[in-house]
Image 1 (tube, rainbow, N blue to C red):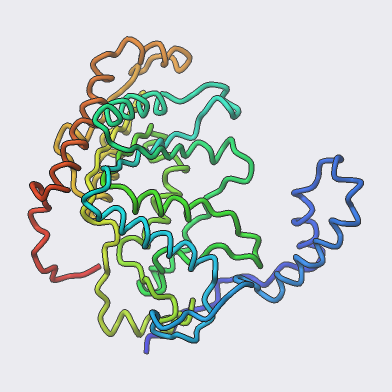
Image 2: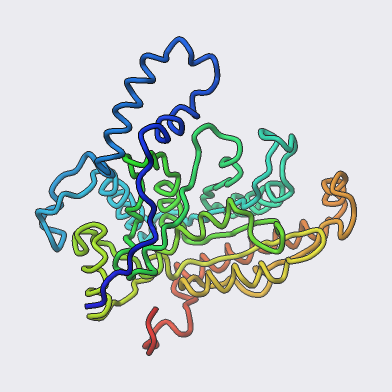
Length: 356
């Protein structure tokens, strides 16, 4: 048995430190009249924290799981049941085609910048093309993380690096009520990805990399590539059980494979090719199928020109606008061909000698 290595995690917060951190969310003097109520809530939160009440509401998993008597989180179960339902719809050839458009920019006019992102405008061009082709469109605007109350994507905890079966599909790390790690948007985002026949990611470059809003989602999608659909097989987050399962032979199921994709990356100085390659490499690894060379686009908007006039530069760049429309057109064709069995991954039937 390969034993988990331990010794990094710090001790739990002291009572005073916990109270200070809890009350930081209520620093506005408007909460002053409710101080007695806050004190009572803080005491309950402290008790839940010290007892590590991650999933306080559970029910027996039932016969469809390897450990039927395991107490499974009802919140995880609800997310998993929704994914099964939308997956069935996605595979029904009588249902309309569906494409997920992802706006990876962190900027919108409802937050500090006071102006919409160019990425959002490009996404609208793609949306118009898809809707004109009678394709249902899901829009995922990740800038809501910066502008909407309580909207959050919690970071990946890298369970996969301990053992792949410890990484559950969908992710079971959240919600963690004892740590106040709740209201995780990924439960809805998993559903959008599962329902889609195609995905188009549109994003700017931030410091040679993907925006943190986009990277949060990417990291949390690791469970879609090899993740374990049965948390009872690892007794929840039992690292030793997960290691034993992986070492016995793990199939690394690709839960989102076979969907078509396109990518639009834009920048103003540098980094567009690197980010475009990074995104397409990631999507290829998960088993998605690119919609052709014209569906993998990287372009500069206002190369070394002022940020202040970049929207006007985009207004004038009608060639880029048409290139973005072509990405959507290519994905629309790829989705139609995939669903009609006219297009498939050429290597789909090959046996992978090194799974991971």
